[in-house]
Length: 131
Image: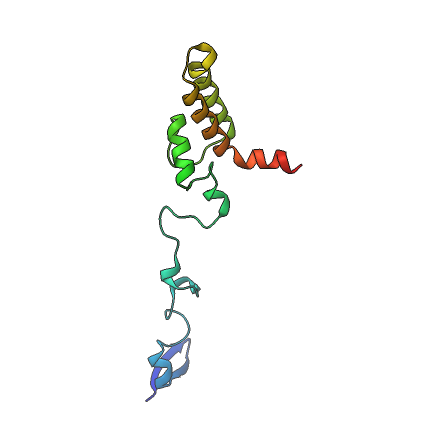
């Protein structure tokens, strides 16, 4: 079965025919298929809160792993979102002054603070070791 569409333009007329197999596929040309010409599957869209970049999964990235979240909580930082190395160092120094064993603080708490700092700044530490 063929469908016909008549187009009249400035005294000229033309006819476009579409076969039944084209109709079953949704036709061709403008206004058919995916809007915007995107060929990717709609179900493969990125889900909210998930990123594709590996750097976003780093401890300072937007989507940290469980250990990094625990380290952020120990230092009293935001549990999600991006952090800067400067912010981590600033918070660690303030807490280290407060909880240092030489100033009457708990050595175990100081160890937890140092471990949290090391975990969050791990990429920087690995760069130092590698060079």
